[in-house]
Structure formats: structure tokens, C-alpha cells
Length: 326
Ligand SMILES: Cc1cc2nc3c(=O)[nH]c(=O)nc-3n(C[C@H](O)[C@H](O)[C@H](O)COP(=O)(O)O)c2cc1C
Image (cartoon, rainbow, N blue to C red; front, side, top):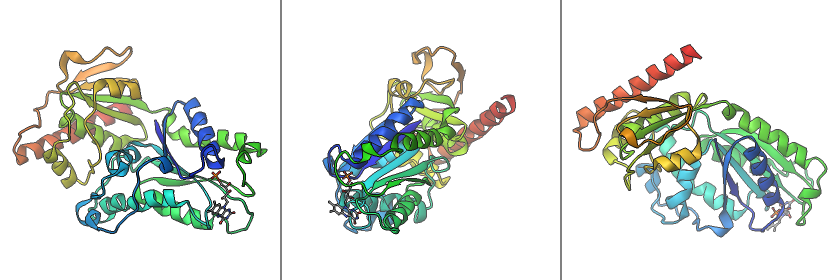
């Protein structure tokens, strides 16, 4: 389970930072891997309305969104947004990141692609403000509701606190520790009992990549799907991306990964070997199975489409037989 925190406050060790750190630590206690992006300290440009994303599904602006943050959002099972209220909304730092997610909105609504994490991803808000008005959090709720929709996350509400102004105010709040513990329990519950499957290929550009995406899309509530290669390629295979896009599955913002990196993320209960051979490290308790499938590299389009369909069929059969036996 991977939890991404997006920290919108420019203030170091301020109130939203306290809340986000406390929630991340509590979620780690439930087995989550976490990562926080402090937007103020990163290079995130505002949207310039080039509208390239609406036609091509990517943003031409060269910054940390492109090199890292889109990918982290799509890896995440849970995205937590933290921001103080600035003039009834999120900070400019967080708003810049949100606006740049028009790219993910465009992939969903214009290009009609489904990110494999969409059926299971959750979104949560943490927010604080100095005053106490009834409508204080209305603006931020509306903004993050549409942000979570754009990134394919179900909005799970949030923790919001009034009358919090100076550094240190948040940690003095009487119920904050218990609120955070309950939120961590609730947000991690859907992911805690998932089994882990690793699809291990050679370069992690072909069948292993497709199998990971299909498993996350079809059964992300029951399985955490990892895919990796013994010699991961530097970049994805555009032909593989194309045939998956034709099937409606979005393969954007994902680079091939190594077996070591995958095994750091989670220890698999099941390993499916798609050409990694004897190089797969032994994982105690993991059942290893081999699928003999052709390498995707260089296949003509019709055979690549056939490979995609075969991978989908095997994933569906595997899921059905595991569900029957459990
Ligand atoms: C530019 C700016 C705008 C703010 N606007 C509001 C506001 O509209 N309503 C409010 O209650 N507090 C407002 N505040 C106060 C902050 O929300 C409050 O101090 C908060 O605790 C800061 O959280 P942080 O430590 O996470 O940055 C504003 C503060 C700043 C600096």
C-alpha cells in the first residue's frame, strides 16, 4: 500500500505539516509505505493553458510534475492533500499542482483512458484555518473534490480544524491524535488484507507490464500488483502502450522498474515469471509460476494485440481460480 502526501503549506513545521506527518506515521503503523511532496520546495509551474494535454495527454512543461509527481500520483493507493486555508481555498502552491493535473483529467475525459489504479484509489483532505466561519472549508472541499475526480481517487472527506493560526496550535488540539488514528485506520482498511503478486519479466516493458496493469485494474481491491524486470529498460515500449491504450488502459507515467525495487515495496505471496528465469530472488512462502509468452519487443501490431489479449485472459483466469480457492 502506497500513500502519497501533498503538502501545500509554505510554512515549515506549521499546522498542516504537523497534521500530515502525524497521519503518515499512523498509516505507516498500519503497514503503508509513504512519501510526502512538499510543493513549496519543489519545482511545480502553474498551468499555462497550452492545451497540449487535451489532445495528446501530456504537459510540455518541464518540471517536477513531469519527471516525478504525475508518476507518484498514479502509483498511490491513497493521496492525502494538506493545506491551510488561504482566502477560503488551498494555497497557491497546491493550486498550481492541482491545475497541472488537468493532464490527468484530459487522459480520463478527453482520451477516455482508465488508469489501472482508479477503481481503488482514495483521496483525503487535511486542512486548518485561523477563523471559525461556517463556510470556511466550503471552497477547499469543492476544489479537492474535483481534483480527486481528475486523478481517479474516491474522495473520503477529511479532517478540518478551525481556530488554528500560529505554529504549534495544531498539536495542542485536544482530539487531533485520536482523529488522526481513526482516519489512518479507516483509510488503510481496504488495502491491509490484499495479497501481493509480482509479475517478473526481462525488461519490464511487455507482458509483465501488461499483467501488472490488468491485475491492478481488475482486482486492485484484492491484490497489490507489482511488475518488474531483471534488466529494466530505460523507457516504456510505445507499441505496448499503444495496444493497452486501445484496450482503454492507461499506461502513462510509468517507467520499467527493477526486481529489487519491487521487492522493497512489498513481499509477494505469488510470483509469475514471464521470462525473468532463474534470476528471481527466493522469497520465502511465495508460490512461483511460469507463463511462457513471447517477448513483446519487435512484434508486429497484430501479434502484440494477440499477446495483450492472452495476458488479459490469463490474468482473469488466475484471479477467478484464486477467488474460487480462497
Ligand atoms: C495568505 C494567507 C491567507 C489566509 N487566509 C485565511 C482565510 O481566508 N481564513 C482563515 O481562517 N485563515 C486564513 N489564513 C490563516 C491560516 O490558514 C492559518 O494561519 C493556518 O494555521 C496556517 O497553517 P500552516 O501552519 O499549515 O501554514 C491565511 C494565512 C495567510 C498567510
